[in-house]
Image (cartoon, rainbow, N blue to C red):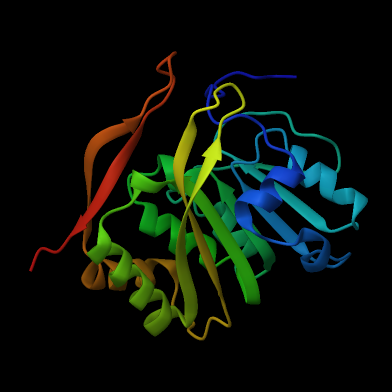
Length: 228
């Protein structure tokens, strides 16, 4: 199995860990005609383990060339710059997960949130898990919540909790972002991003908040500021 360009953190996680981190009941949400898109799936262990529940359409997305387990549609794209996933799965997913994936590494995490929200069918759910300190401040979070509610018609909630790495017992302060709702607009991703800039502000990179020992990657805090 090719493992080139895989950062040392985060590690692979199984379905039970996904269920714990996302607070989703995959047994209830998944069915034979459902579509689950996992952003930052790595080899797709969680996706693969869900096959014991049903034969859902399983899609694993990675930014790097990683060989995935059988039975998973393997796609390679860097979100939000690459629109190929958006063009292929716009409003087709029942579940979207991003566990320390594109949201964590992007310089524009709000753009990732909008991108992933647009992959959902009406009534679908997206869950993002990242470092608590990755995104903004209280005003940013309030603005994001209002934007998703007023513009996209989706409820966006932020929940702080603690996670653990595979190799360290030290807890990581994390945040669970849950997006769900009927989605009542037909604006394109590009148009919604313009509106988000006006409503929330422009992303500004701040200090590094995570860097693994091998320095293979880096996560930086993002603050959104208005130009007005």
